Length: 520
Image 1 (cartoon, helix red, strand yellow):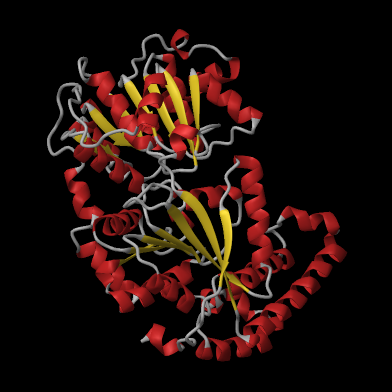
Image 2: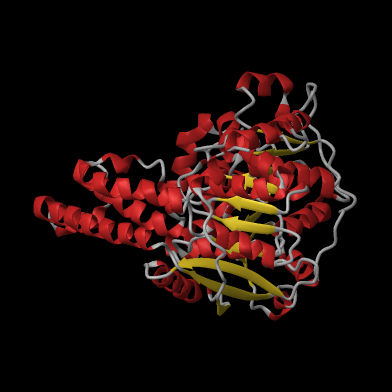
């Protein structure tokens, strides 16, 4: 079993998005403009979702902090309401191809729109034109693809209208926006000088109804708030502490698992700190103390300094094996340390992997998600768990460093349909519709409040009547990790008002597995 084995598995399995995508594009030319009338939903809304739906008028933004409050289900009910008696043309914007595929499947399965199509940049422009794909009554696409086909020729006019706060329709009175309704998913990434913001700006000018969904737009930024107000007549902010929502959200419990790390790993961790200090002094002497704040990637000494800091953090947060392929090992100052590191890897490949497995064995769950910041560690842990539980039961999701967009979407479908465990990097924190989970494990603490909120949101839906959303976070003793965790948690509480019960848990180690276990 290896990483390549998993990629081959999902590429050839029934979860392959590459194969499924063939069903998501038009097969024949769509000669006339189509409209959609939705008659039935294959789900029911919670009472608090119905109240939110009642507030939505022409343009609205729904903000859920954190994710997991069923914003997409509200969007589906909105489309039913708007098209039931009066068929409309629907444009559904998503920031990424994997999420686009997921939302197209959602529209087909949950809203019964058989002719919902996903149109991406992977379809050549000439083919899009030949098939007349934009005549479809319901199109899911990325903002960039839509912008390229409809708005790129009017870039100057759009920017002029934005800058001078005038209605674009007064400048382009001959232009016709081709859709009546826009659903903008994960729209916080659209705000500003982006293709997505331009699409919403133009749609608003020509009278389209807009419903946008977001988990973490930066409403504490006045500039961003003003940009949002130019598009949306109402901004509905959801809070999990709202009494009507609270009854549908389980209690939050963050369980701290502090683990011992090998003494030789701790020694390497401390030695790296000394070398980092030497590089910091070199930068101060040559460029001044203020230069350290700039995260410079121009000077070789600065690049080495940043790489060393990253490696030192990862070696304890994601375990020794996570830095096994780092090029920074080649610098002269690390030669002696590297020899110690190679010996360490043979004895104790990763001190956190066995703890994660013990938590999985200890807990009863339907679905579990393990967040790992390092791509290398995610692949290693995922393959280890596949050996233990079978490849069908463990999905692995990483970024473009090791998976193309189709494989990412296939891995998510694998988890949704059959796998019990998902091992994912930060790509699983945002922008993807990951199924609800009973259990969550953080191999490392999130680096900022946004990551914290996004991670926790994956276990906040009530699954099988669970009363507590459990998240285990594995912390290495005698390192910076606990301090970092508590620091980010305080920021989360201050910025978002999101709280959770903090517990400490002791877990007995059963010994470390050797390198040969993972590499054979």
